[in-house]
Length: 272
Image (cartoon, rainbow, N blue to C red; front, side, top):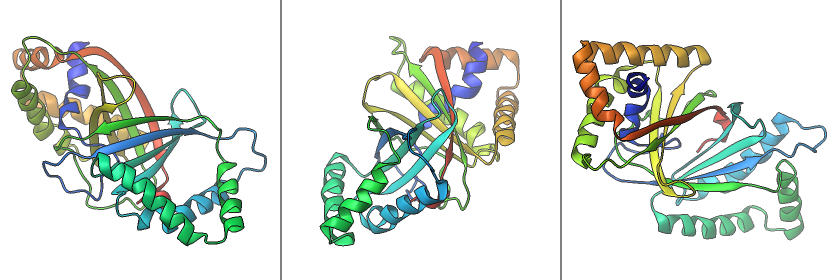
């Protein structure tokens, strides 16, 4: 069980999140906000195309013109415990940029809808798609993800795995980074079924032990292929039982062994 955990979880330490397709793979850390929204299940005559058109208008007139927002995307439930959830994922340069982005949004909104009645009508329509409750988390990135060269031109599946760290007395930051780099170089980066890889760590929210890794794949079939390829590449690099056990024992001490899994689908038209 612990060896299997190492196959799938060890790559957490590379740490870069979704919504960073336009960011360079450098030593800089970014902040990523994740707002969990919910569909308004009482809305009659819902149209996905109309919803996309409303959100696309806001994306074009506000988000894409706001230089404090480095990247943004919307993810929809595919396989999660709540079919109403929608994730709005936004990447910023730093804490200050989050506040500045909000001020810039206000400025751009007034410029895009200068007439107060038209502005109110648009946002009332936009608001009808969502329930009133939402939640927010902020994550920080650490360099080392598998970053695509640009945005994808189709909807992608996002396999999200949330694991929990322990803080062993015999652990060191150097060991943890060395182990993660070994795995990333030997497995994640060589796995062609994984189109992008964005791990991240807790910065502000409910659980400071949380580590989240996000794998982007083309389909459910390719998710299965990716996990099988991970195992194959792992066994090829640590090529006997003793080596695999030694590696897994070192890595396992940094995790509780508890994790949860989610699958979301992106809306590629609504990506900055």
